[in-house]
Image: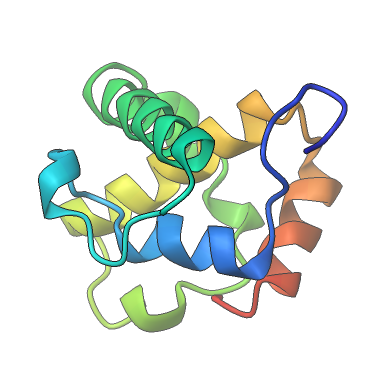
Length: 113
């Protein structure tokens, strides 16, 4: 847990979050979290991500340059899935109150991008 009692963004946590990007029903999640607090956290992040996709496109498009690459999503630019990816990134960046450098470092260290 971090100073705000949020789960630590480990490589495993990030992998689970980004693997399930775009899934709007919790019952469809691939490899869900087993710990209750992490499951609740995941539901919250899914809600934030959905809100970002629906209402904050200009905001999440502003963080696109912070992604080092699109990793496995790079072959499908401008798709709805990529929008969800950026919306999730914005949700995490804001929830954890990361500046651009911290966010970019987190993405790089995750080995997902």
